[in-house]
Each structure stands twice: as C-alpha cells, then as structure tokens.
Amino acid sequence: GESVGLHLPTLSVQEGDNSIINCAYSNSASDYFIWYKQESGKGPQFIIDIRSNMDKRQGQRVTVLLNKTVKHLSLQIAATQPGDSAVYFCAETLYNQGGKLIFGQGTELSVKP
Amino acid sequence: DTGVSQNPRHKITKRGQNVTFRCDPISEHNRLYWYRQTLGQGPEFLTYFQNEAQLEKSRLLSDRFSAERPKGSFSTLEIQRTEQGDSAMYLCASSLVWAARRTGELFFGEGSRLTVL
Image (cartoon, rainbow over all chains, first blue to last red; front, side, top):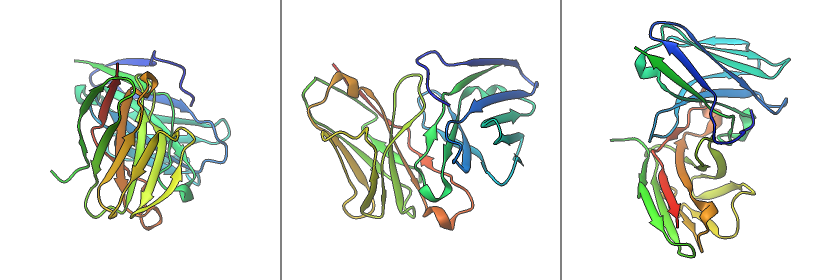
C-alpha cells in the first residue's frame, strides 16, 4: 500500500468482536509479507508473516490471508480486546532481500470496551 | 531488558546542527536496520548492516546521513546540517541472518524522535 498522508484509516470495533484490517501491496514480485502492530510511542511489533506460496496462515487469535491475484492482504483478529488498540501496518518484501521491508499505510484500530 | 535500545529517545535541535543517534541491537543479532517514520506514515527503509558491513542504502539516505556499525555490535546514525524535513522518528531494528530463520521477525527499538526547529 502507498502512504496517502497524515490521515490514517481507522477501524472502530466493540470488544469481543472480530476485526478485519485490509492492505493493498504494491509490488507483484513481493513474496513475503508481514503484519506489524505499533502502539503509541513504541516501535512496530511483529504479529504474523506469510510467504507467497500460502494463502492463509493462522496464529494465536490472528489470521493472515493473502490474495496474490489482486495484491491484497488482510489481518483478522478474533475476539478483539482493548489491548489490540494500535496502528497496524502490513509490509512486503522479497524474501531474499532480508529485512528491507516496504510498509503500507497503517490502519488505526480502536477497540471500545 | 534484552530488547533493541535506542538513545536518545528524543532530540530537539536547531536547523544546521549535527545529531547522532545510537542503537544497541539484541546481542546475538547480526543484522541491524535503520528506518525512518514520519507522522501517520509507515516506516521507510534507510540502510542495513550485516555485522559491520553496510550492505544497502536507500536513496532516502542523502549525503548528510551516515551510518556506522564499527564492531558489528552497536550502530550510530549521524545527520549533518539538519533540515526541518529531517524531523521524524528514527527506528532501529535487528534480526538474525535472514535465511537461517523461518520468520522475518525484525525486532524494533522504541525509536529516537528528532525535532528540527
């Protein structure tokens, strides 16, 4: 995804609901994708990753879906909790490029108790 | 605390001054990365090291920017003749050699915020 300025997309959900955060990536050659969570005043924190030979990967309460046809990633968070409130970024790269990540525009998730 | 450590956390300087940021990575990590993040944007890659070798630099890293990792441990990022456009959060991250891991987990520090007046 490309950054479009200061105004972050926001998603507001009720505690206990499921959240879906979407991301469009830019390079069709990218073969490795990562979701990061960034809380206010902190650095990004790894959540889950997926390689291009997969279309779904599950972690603890999180699932990442990859649709290479339309260059789209999504992050699903089950039973969203107040502690999930943060900005979420997707990142893309070529697996053999190491940690040179291209981050998309973030989405701010707000969880209402 | 065995995470990535960055200092100073916040630096306010006047335009034209030089600033230096330090990053101490997780001790066993041999890769170290610098990213820059402006308000409302995702981090942008600047450069990375494997041990003491600087392997790649982004076009964003102008001649006023220099990064070093002299002994393959801590790293410094220096900005000379700062400009207001340099105001940003400078993030450091570290990881193990990529191919040896099943995940691409970069461990980020909390960043050094630069404000240029």
